[in-house]
Image 1 (cartoon, helix red, strand yellow):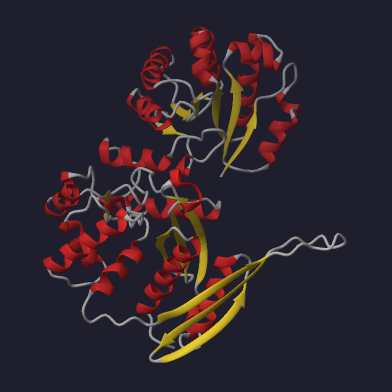
Image 2 (cartoon, one colour):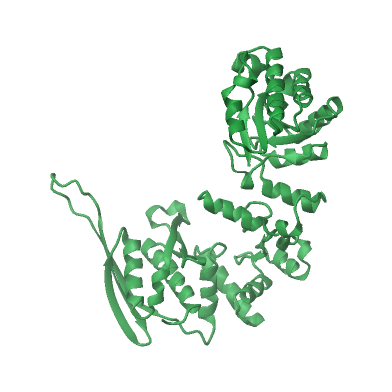
Length: 458
C-alpha cells in the first residue's frame, strides 16, 4: 500500500502543508508524490516560478524522508517537459534525488511519446543524473504504453507503474499483464516466479470480473483468442508442432489453445475440437461434420463463438444420438392495443406456448414474458422442468442479434447469439433464420440440450 499526494503548495512550508500531513497520517511505509517537471505547467498551470517548483520538490521529499518514509517522485509530464526544456526537466530529477528520493518515476502523462523517444530520453537522464533510480509511468493514448515501458527498461529504468489489463483514465495505462510476460519470457527479467507467471490469465480475468468488465478476448497472452487457431493449416500445424504458430506455450501464462471451427477449418480442426469435447469420431465423421459446418455457415450460422451449438451439430449427426427432448411446436403472440388516454402504460403483451416431448410424454405450457424471446424461454423451461427440474439453475446471460444480409431489409437473415450459465459454466449458442423468433428458438434449444447432455435427469 502506497500513500499518494502532491508536493507542497507554492510559497508555503512542508511542515504545515495539509497534503503532506495527510500522506503521513496514512502511515504507509511508502509515499509517492506527484511533482511538476514541465516548465509550461509550472508557470501556466501551477502559477509559480521554476525555482519555487524545484524547492517544492526538494522540501516535500526531504520532509517525508525526515519522517522515515520511502519516497518516490512521480515526475508528471516528464517526457513532454523534456522535449520543451530538457535542462529544467533534469533539474527536477536532480532536486528529487538530492533531497533523498528513493526513485523518480518519469511519467508520459499525455501518452503521446513514442518508444524511440522514451529510449533516448531515459538514456539521457541516466547520463545526466546517474545517481537517480528511474521508473516509468506510461499512458496508452498513442497505443504504445507497453512498448514505452519496455523501451524504458532497456534504457535503464528499473520499475514500471501500470495497471492490470491497462485499465485507466482515457485510453488507459500500461498493461502490466503484457509487461510481466514480456519481461519474464522474452527478456529474461526474473520479475515474477514461474508459478506467478502461470496465474496471469487468472489474475487478468479476476480483475475484469471485480470491475464488471467483460474480459478482452483479444488481449495478448491471456485473452481467449490469444492462442486460437481458425484456419485448417494453422490448427493442423499446431497439433504437430505447437510453436509453429504460437510464440509461447499458452500454459506458461495460464492460458490454453483454442481450435475454432468455421468455413476455414480443416478436418484436423474438427478432429481436435471433437477430442476436446470428449467425442471419439472417425475421419469420416469429422469430414461430414466439416461439410455440415460449411453448409450451415452458408446459411448464416457462425460457430466460432458458439461452441455448444457446434457440439450439438456434431452429436445430432451421430447414429446413436438420443435427444433429451423434442420440440412438437411453439407459438408466440405479441399483442399491443391502443390504450385509453388516461392509461399511460404502453407496454406490449408477449405470450408463448411451447409443446415438448420427453420419452414419449408431451408437455404443453404457456408463459408470458418481457418480450417474445423471454416468453418463449420461460415457457420452454416451464415445460422441461417437469422432466428436468435441475434446469432451474440455468440463466440467460446475454442475447445478441446481428443482421447477416443487410441489403434485403426486413427480409434479412438474422443471427442470434445466446450466452447461458448455470453459475459454474458459461456456454454459447447460435441460431440463424429470416425469422428472429425461429433463430432465437434454435439458440435456446441448443443451450438447453447441450446442458442436459452433461447432467443426469433429476
